[in-house]
Every structure is written in structure tokens, then in C-alpha cells.
Image 1 (spheres, rainbow, N blue to C red):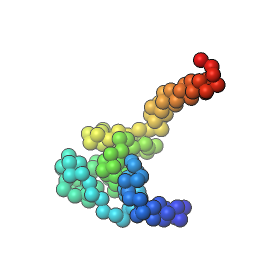
Image 2 (spheres, rainbow, N blue to C red):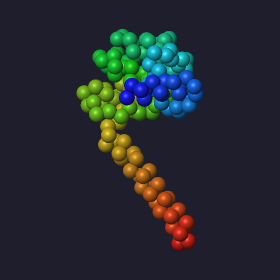
Image 3 (cartoon, rainbow, N blue to C red):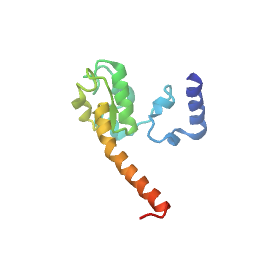
Image 4 (cartoon, one colour):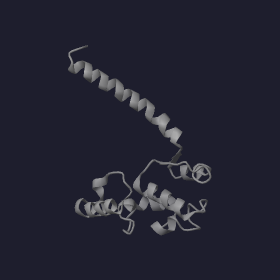
Length: 136
């Protein structure tokens, strides 16, 4: 596992963080300094990344610093939702993060969101298979 993370870190150095699309930069390199969009900081009422997770910061409703860090990374990375099974923290306080434009989903919410997409993809694949075999 550690070798895999090292390889990701090496690749990030070679290809740049942008190569990973929507992956939060802190996941690829936790020790790196984030350069957030200043509008995000202003919207949160802070002037630095560290203030976002401060005990008296905009996410103070979440007592656990780890929870605040997950929310911070989602906000800074443009991730639209956090998928969680933690009903005591994230789910119970989902209105707090919704105020910042971030949704909190349970696995059942994700499943409901993806089933129509999977069904549409299956219909498209069936259509293509039929077209490829000469059927209409």
C-alpha cells in the first residue's frame, strides 16, 4: 500500500496534480501547501487554508479536526458531495456543509443517483450491440 502511495506521489511530481482531475490535491501530497481560490476563502470568511479547520473557524460545528479537514479538501477541490456512513457527524450536521454548497450523501443516496445512469448506459450498450450485429 505504501509503495502505491509513493508511486502516486512520484507520478504527481512528473505529471502535475492537474493530471488527476477531481482528486483532492491533499490526498496526492498531504504535506504540500494548498493554493485555494481566494473566492472560496472569502466565502468561508477566512484568509488562509488553516483557518478553515481551526476550532473556531467556519466549520467549528464539527468537533473533530479530521472531519473539518475532509470538508475543507472537498470544498477546495470542487467536490460536490461527501459520501459517508457516519450518521453522528456528517449526516447529522449536513445542513452546515450544505450552506457552503457541499452535499452529504449516504450510500443509499449515491445508489439512487447512479441507478438511472447505469440503466441508461445499459440501454445504450444494448442499442450499440444490436446495431453492430445488423439488427434494428
